[in-house]
Image 1: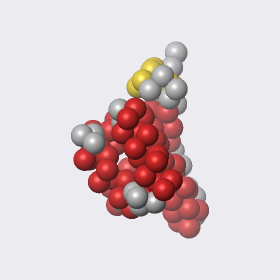
Image 2: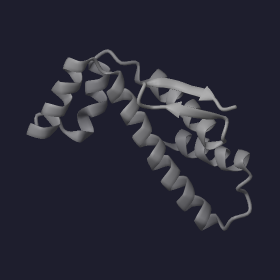
Image 3: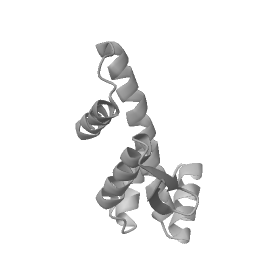
Length: 114
């Protein structure tokens, strides 16, 4: 999580958001970190085969899969969570800095904005 915190901090620096109070900066980093983590979770779930996505949804609904066990489920399903995380972080960076527009519905990487 510290890597994500540092990553978001560097995005703020790249965006030129450097002259705010330390408390406000930490709050912004916290909010952007939460947003990025949600995007990583969403990307991983979209990468699941349909039958595994259904199994995960059913397991979360009936309690057989606990929220804290989702990461292990994704890895057991054969996903390269590290790669998905890295790609999502890069897309998030490009979108945040205004370099790209994500196509989330198509589950495709961000494309350069013209």
